[in-house]
Amino acid sequence: MANAYVIGHITIKDPDKWSQYRDRVPATLQPWRGELVFRGKLVAVLGGEFAHNDTVVIRFPDMDAVNGWFDSAAYQSLIPLRLAAADVDLLAYDG
Image 1 (cartoon, one colour):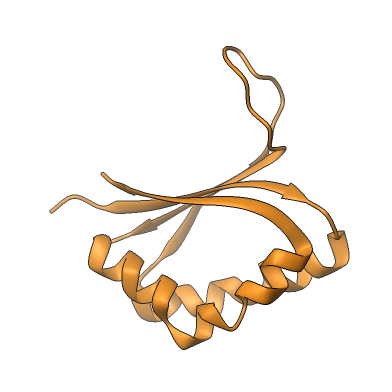
Image 2 (cartoon, helix red, strand yellow):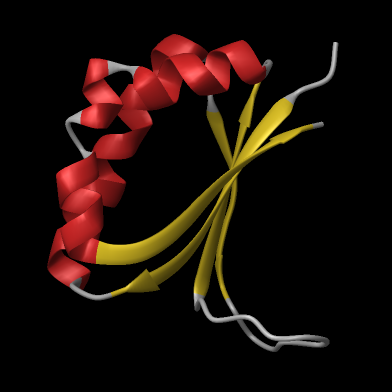
């Protein structure tokens, strides 16, 4: 069975609020067996255009887990904080 991935492209607006959000997300991933694969800062755009400075990649066992996590009360309660903290394009991929 293929994994599924959530990729977030991020531009931080409020570092303090972003830190609060980032610290709370891991607990929301655990029930869905989500794991952080990568978190990094953009160094260079090698082709095309890209607007964000940071990226995060989270692996899940499948798309059902992605949807369960995203729709969970635990994660939904963090969305207002995320919106105040950063501009985020959050994408789901079947892998």
